[in-house]
Structures are given as structure tokens and as C-alpha cells.
Length: 281
Image (cartoon, rainbow, N blue to C red; front, side, top):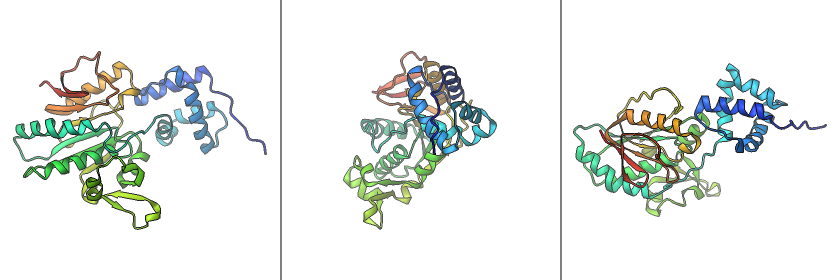
């Protein structure tokens, strides 16, 4: 039986799909990403039994496709690269500078609110939960809640389970591994799971960062949005950070990735440390 291999995606269709992706998610797909998009979409087409890129585009542009396929398409063209204690100096700044400042200014008993925006498979919010739990041991009455959001429902399902291969926690200090992870009852599986009392500190939810406004049920004091801006152009980045600033409590903090920059943006933020900022109001 002959296998039908779809012809390459046309420049016109590539631009059409690129515009659609940008409108829906803010993600930019420059011409240099055409080959990558083609390869990733071929996999989706095989799963959906669609023979041409035009067939695929017609489907994903439809109401049904937007509902059932858009997130899978975005998952296929973005990289969910993350790890525990990634860019570890951020957590030093958090515990040595940010948390003491927030505690000194605290005037009520509400839990501290941390938002992991673009949380991927959960390593960042669980790292935050471990770091804040360690900090809390020396602070009477200190409590916190972590909100973790992502565009992908599939990746959020994975994150909520809190199950990882043993190799994925190599960057976690030994004492914290023993304290905050459970090993699988079957050693052959080489799996670990985040302890329930840590998982309970994190609330996961789906959120498109391109939504017009963020309605937060809890107060937000610190936002971690790291290695997310790499997909956006400058106007989209500036719009996003203005939305972040609107949901932050006065004097709140924003952490971005080490490879990212706020250069060229007019924002009411001051630099606290490398890629760490505080609102000026």
C-alpha cells in the first residue's frame, strides 16, 4: 500500500497559519520556522488522517478545530523546556531579597500569592513550593499559595500529577529530594512523585496570556514568567507585561528568563537583580 506524503506547505498558507497562531496565542512564526512548522504539522496530519496541509488548515480554522485541535497544534510547535531549579539564582534572590521585603511590608494575614505564568509540566511551580516551604520554616504564620497556568491542557494534566523520572530531579538538592519527593513502589520504574503537601500548595489552571484581562481570585505578589517572551514580538511583550503589572499588588515583583529583556518597553518597573523587577507604585 502506497503512503501519501503531503507536498510542502506553500508560502501563502504558511503566512496564513502564522497569522492565525499569532492572533490566537501571540506566538510569532518567522519565515525561518517554516520547515519546523511543516515537520511538526505532518505528525498532526497523520494522527488526524488528513492528506494535505490545506485540509489541515481548513480543519484547525473551523470552530471545531479551534476547540479540539488548536492547543495540540500549539503544543507541537512550541518547546516545553523546563527543569527543577532552572536559573537557580532567581530562587536565591527570592529568599534573600524578595520574601523578606514582602514580609516587612505585610499588613494582613492573607497567604503570599505567587503566579507561575507558562508553568509547562510543573517543575517551576513545584520548585517555588519547595523554596517557599523551606523559607516558611523560619517564619511564624507565613503562608503562601501558588497559581500555575499554561495554555496547554495536556501539559497541565501532566503537571498536576507531579510524577517525574528520577533523572528529572537531578538538579534538586539531596535534602530536598528526600523531603519533598516520594519514590515509586516499583524501583524499576525509576519514577518519583511530588509529596501531596507540596502539590496542595499549587493550583493549576488553563490561561491564554493573550486574553484581554486576567481575573485573579487571589492577590498576586510575585510573578514568574520565564522563557515565555521568546515567542512574542516587542508590542505583544509590552502589552503582556502591562497586564501583569495591573494584577500585581503594589511593590510586587516580576521574574523573567535570563535570555529575555524588557529593553524598549515603557513600564513602571525598577531592576532589583538580573532579570528581576519590582513595580514602582
